[in-house]
Image (cartoon, rainbow, N blue to C red; front, side):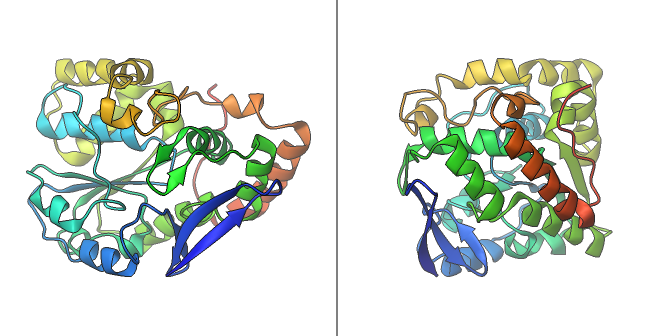
Length: 296
């Protein structure tokens, strides 16, 4: 493992822990290697579910949906999530079932039992333009151990996002790794769902997730989960979460912003958009996935 300093053109930097070809965040415990090995060797508990995402693509949102479905209660989770990425394995082992495990890991670093026990997996993806906007806002607002409010401009950050590696490398690399993993493990129950579909028709997505998990599908219950988990309702409910608001520079909850689809149009210049579209055309050639940039 080595500490890497990824500098933007203005001299502002994002620190990462680089290991096994991947840029992990400074919050990853220890030398990364030992932590990954401990996570990979976690003990299985019946009913375990894994949510995996690239950062800023709907992780917290999906966590509460899955948690409600697994617990059969339309009740917001308390405290904060304990991602596999940052949480000691002993704390993960101590969690009561049903466990909803969350990570930004690449497939090679998830717990071994996920494959052995054929655990249900939900992979959420979001168009990379909105992801870039959300990540920039998040990094500027975040004030937690190892990650202190990145001060780079949007222009400089966008260059990093498109030409260098941000935490967990590139959006393309992460999504492709999971698509390849899904193809290599056709008997593994993996649901790939988009942030944009969740915004457009959350009720249908809640139904789809419930069917995938094999949980309660009573229409009234799914309606209640949907209402509680509309992005605006959840963002409001989580605005008073003291654990998460303490992680921001301004007292807001850094894990929730607008949750809009197409907000990238307010950020990308014509030149930036044309450049990124050319990159998308090239990089998406091997990614068999429908990516939506607006809601129609």
